[in-house]
Image 1 (tube, rainbow, N blue to C red):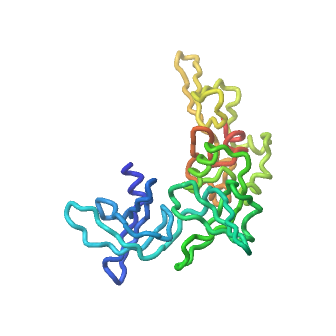
Image 2: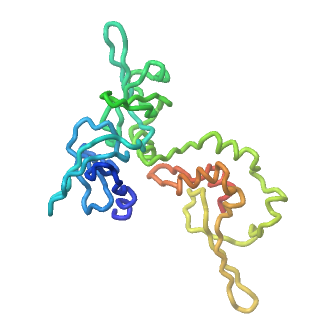
Image 3: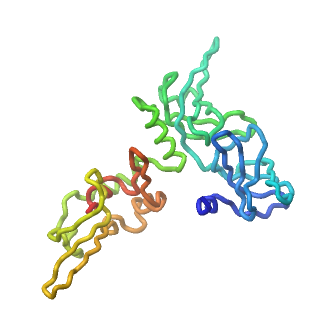
Length: 283
């Protein structure tokens, strides 16, 4: 997708060494590594092994001279910014005579290395458990990134694990932060007099949507009314989200960060909490 690729690319930055440029790392499902760099027609290929980075990270590379007709090559220098913070993986316990060592193997191809988990960050996970692990750090001389288990995923089938992993790769969580949920508490589920004061009440107008019966977040609809002069009034109804989500609030900031609701085959990661998206702001 050309539009998607343009958003991933990073501008060539001015460094002391003119061959040093910033780019965004892209790791394919087979483990091949490319760097998207603005100004280059083709992504640069990177043949380094054991690069301490994840797909999507912003990295600094040394770019070889681009030869006509050939894909440019890049050599890894360092990570500028880690983008992905959480992964789904399988927890494993490696035992020796005197101690145990803990690792999490990500199910995503975006991470090529197992996470080392300190004994204080296991969250009581057992060998073979699937967990969500949060990335902590990756020392320059360390073979594995360090992480901590933040949730043990019980009774998850392979499809659910994959769907959750896809959401995390795109920095989406179905759950909302506590500070966002706190702002929801004062909002009443029933309409009050104040809710009706500055809004047009259309509840008695026959209104239709094209969404299926199973849908819950009806955010647009149509109405048709025949007038006395043989004309018709067509109403276009849009959910009044701004009544509940005020500019600058934590709700507003989280919706801005998410930008949209994400629809997967079996679930939705909504832009707004369900109290709004499926109830108060649903037509």
